[in-house]
Image (cartoon, rainbow, N blue to C red; front, top):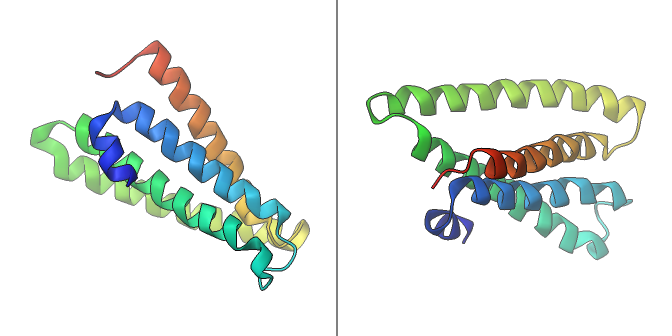
Length: 130
């Protein structure tokens, strides 16, 4: 659904919406005390929607802004940077899982996603893409 919406609106606005959903989903894991408890199913659904929204909206923005003659290279670099991010967040997530709490990796990624959300709002205001 967000892919369709992102195609119709400003891509930075789409990224802000996707990041907001992702930040809410990841941050909501703070409240999960038992992942087997069906009471938390709505939070897990929000997490899945948020993660997908982040990925789709970011890919839409990169696809729009990458120069046509180098689009493949730019998208490849985007994917590589994502891989490095996954490696880093997995490493730091493991450390804070042991030091803090089981949901710490999700809360950490949620915090980073909040930063992306607010940065997208700033970019939308300062340098709007039409």
